[in-house]
Image (cartoon, rainbow, N blue to C red; front, side, top):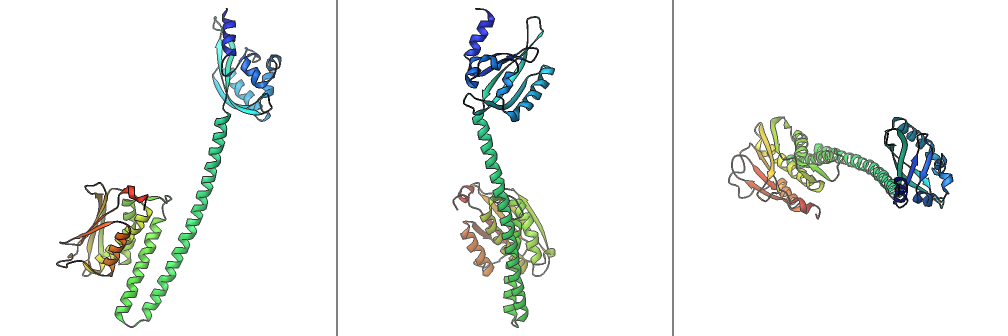
Length: 339
């Protein structure tokens, strides 16, 4: 058996559609699987007849692509829709390469087509799913922006009502209580603002969050009286934990300004790290006199801190000594998903 017959026998049993063109770009051979796929006799496939089964929307592009590769004798790949014997168009990936005779003269192109319809349909479904996801994200962003706007406006209304009432009351203790409530409402507004600045609604970097959060919280209490340093790991935490952490830090900041810095300037430092069990740990310390011999720090703000900590399964401890030193241990990251 000569090489030509051996090639044809191999090609006719190949699981792909094989074609060959000569130096004139005219098709001079297709294998049996190609004929079975198109359902056409060999004569209709030869010459330029092989273009007749390419989808009308693809044929001009295919001609240009093939001509460009042919002129440069370079390998090419292109995908297009090819009509099957039942009239259904299937996507194929066509790969062709120039070949040369024994004397090194250009002899034409040899190529093969493989059916990629399943892949193409999967790509279309993926593109549709991506478009739908993007549409849903845009809708989510619009909804979140609207919710954020409404919450901000409602908090402002509450603050205005509190301020009006505080101006009307004559009792100093009552006025101070109302002003304290007003500062807490302001703190809630700051926390809400910081949590909704990021596009990610699943988590937030703890270091970035605290760095952004504490300065405006301090300004509620005329923060130019205190210096701030924040260092440590920018570990991601979920937004529910971040909300509770923000409210706890707001109360501890208020406590520092109301008591530790009552007589003048001071400093607040925050360190973010991990304890021996690998859980995130936040240590917040002020430069005030501390709690002294108090059996247990008390007050409505610190009661609120403990309630918030219990709600978020946050372990909290206050150390005695110079300056109030609070250690907050967050729940393990694994527990956030089940919270």
